Length: 138
Image 1: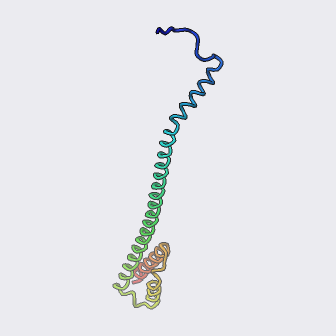
Image 2: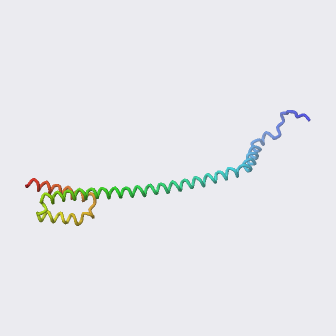
Image 3: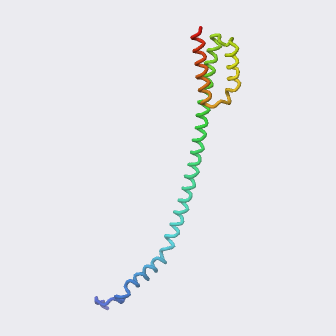
């Protein structure tokens, strides 16, 4: 049997677009579930990665806050250390015999743990001024 090539289409020219649409729908029905299952697995994988990223970001934020608190605590401890050094210098020079000066130092030492960084800096500055004033008098 011989096939002959003719110019007669198997489909009417008016219904070519409709036939293309029908053929596309048939193909989609066959391979569509493959895409859906792959898409579902990708979506679940993406959701897991987003959840992991959120937990990592939260842990970074918590660690950052802890580091800020530790840094503030370190600054406070350094300021307290410097104030105690100044008080030690005052005691070693012999200015602690002055009752007004000694009373201020006692009040400062009793409440030094409750001060903020700014209060500690201002108290350190005040002690240095007092020490310098006392040294200039002698």
